Length: 104
Image 1 (cartoon, one colour):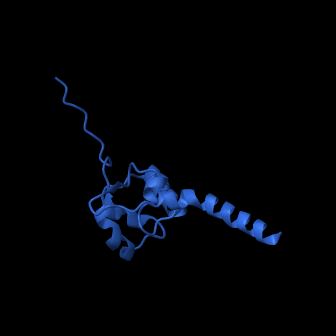
Image 2 (image 1 turned 60 degrees about the vertical axis):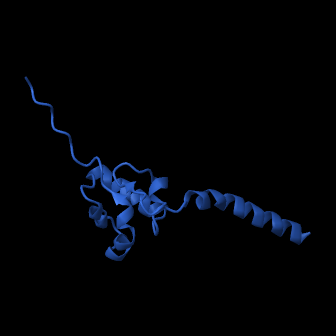
Image 3 (image 1 turned 90 degrees about the horizontal axis):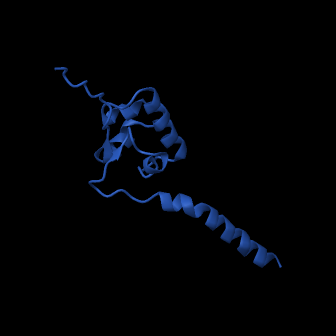
């Protein structure tokens, strides 16, 4: 009687965890994540970034957009060694405001 319940519990745990595993699709070498536009799920694809760090990146950019990829180091919990591993996969597009067109 205990064995079927244990199997059921293990199966339920695996099913509950599967969305987290599916969201962690590895980045290809040339693929870049835009720090100013990426969703929490997209940010979580970066190595070493879980949901809390991804949410912290989003919260930081809402206060001030990232101008350069290394600006992400201002986010608590993200250090220089982590940045060295992922800098090739980071972009900081959309940070600059476009100038108004000249008036005629």
